[in-house]
Image (cartoon, rainbow, N blue to C red; front, top):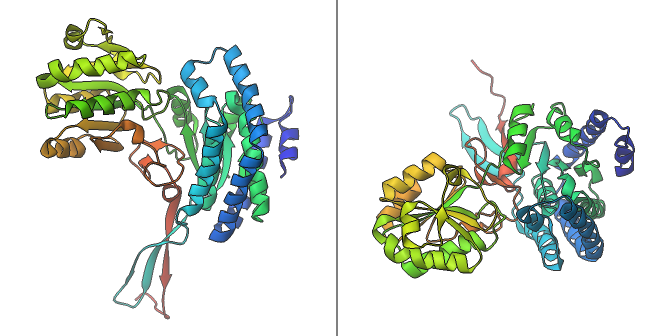
Length: 431
């Protein structure tokens, strides 16, 4: 099915269920073809897509400007505007992201383990694609390229449903991906973008169990909750990024300042941005005031408990819901805790199991934190903003999975595969 056919089905009076069924059928057929595609063909398509992104950067910027105007008119908040915005640097980052996926090892066909039984049967566990992946995301247009590239490299067909606020930007990027697929002699329907901003398309995709094997949502809590409630397929979920930095009593004060400021303020609208700062009571008087000064100087609002407010009058009172709020903005909550045990209890009580960091020169304390905190990503003496598949050397990512089954942490090409068993014999029959 061509993009023109899909657009016709999705017209003002179109049947969204029929549209998604057509996309699903096309994706299933494309997925079968991709399962046997060579690494060279997939890489050629990705390199061609990167070249198309650069060649058509003006078109992408023009489309993004349209989205940005509409988003501002609708009152979209600053954090989501930042995630939506593209410029030449970000577009070059999208192109480089495609090229970085090219450099990743192709997981398809990788032999995870192999052994021989006493009867001579040779058994192998081999990586294979998941099949067809439905990816639902909100305002980040770069996810169109990231998700498409990772799905392609891992041999999966993808149906992408971007947010309505990024519709024009995503279409422009998707057009480059389609031209790249054509250049690599791969089905253009291997990466499809739902060509309607009708919210009913999300529900239709979540019901498409005959064609879609897994759903990956990336967005706010309301989207994730809807996907969990309505999906007929398994879900790899990216939940809230309620990330913590804990400044331990043995933290170097200058290191703590640099890490906290970066973790909060480098980019406030990403899921790895720190939302809560925990400071050990033993060093709160020495370590916290300079950190607060840095944060406020950078334009961050600081909300704290009574102990934090006693150390700096500029800290406003934190409410109960501040400990469970993913601000995605220049706001941070601060609590002074008794010790490492109290910090771990706070994170377990209020956290979202995403990313946490401890700043300390005490290796034993660090190991306890790393071993006992139940989150997808744990860091020692490093900013939470490193919670990113690219920073892990995994190329682009679809999201950070906070679940426990199948995938946890950055979801890259390896996490978009499953496995099968291949058994080779020489005439054996079971007695």
